[in-house]
Length: 358
Ligand code: SAM
Image (cartoon, rainbow, N blue to C red; front, side):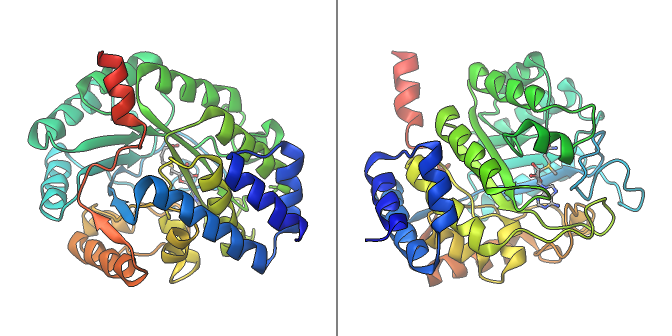
């Protein structure tokens, strides 16, 4: 048996590999080891979640951002980016439409826009929750203080996505302006967990300067932090950023990492991202077959879709919410999986809630 096969079998059996073993596995990967990895990853996800794929309705609240991340199309230095922000009424309309379409989780994402103060977001979360008490609300609004996170949690938000982007300090510094730090990012993740959110971290695959050693750091971090969700997708260049000329991350490596993450954290909620669907027409289906169990169709109004361009050639920017929803249903059904009309909580969630309330 090849070294990669032996490592994959160990990872599947123990849900863990050392730093050195992960490095060996990433370095030795090839087509046949990827097939074995994906098979084991599917077994692990079937054991926890069966063939259900959870859908999240993504609503992109604002393309204004005070940050200047070098990779991102809505960075504040990109003067060509068209800026918009949705009103409360528009957001509630998106949720109402989403609920009709079977969404039971809404992801409210946006740039770090000072318009979305603690009060504005708390009011929005309360309104969405009042209109749809059967739904979960995920926020993805970047770095804030404990008081803001607590306020929004108390208003009804239960999940928060904040990718750590890279666990390596020097690499983090090369992707972000000097005002941002990995330490702040990690501190936010700790606070979010402490407040009570189901927390998601994650990173881009193939971001400029990334090495396999950086990815090993990311995988060890994911294992040790034990988030409820991990969002990974390929880096894709945006023409109006300093990384315009950099190559995109590959489908092959992103899929392999999805498989490894599924085996490191068998219960994790793992999206097959829009970026994966952007670098390959069947990227999201392949992501599900590699171990992912979440997809996030876009519910934002079509009129603003093209303005939330984090990277070039983003898919689904012209489609109505219903088209996206049913397109994904066809794609997921086509590979033998089922779109589930449920909140799609982490498998450990209800048990944690029960313990907390006992
Ligand atoms: N402002 C929030 C935050 O910082 O978490 C949420 C919005 S931010 C644009 C969402 C994610 O988009 C980032 O965490 C980053 O990983 C991803 N992203 C940004 N630019 C990208 C690019 N060029 N290619 C792929 N993903 C990108």
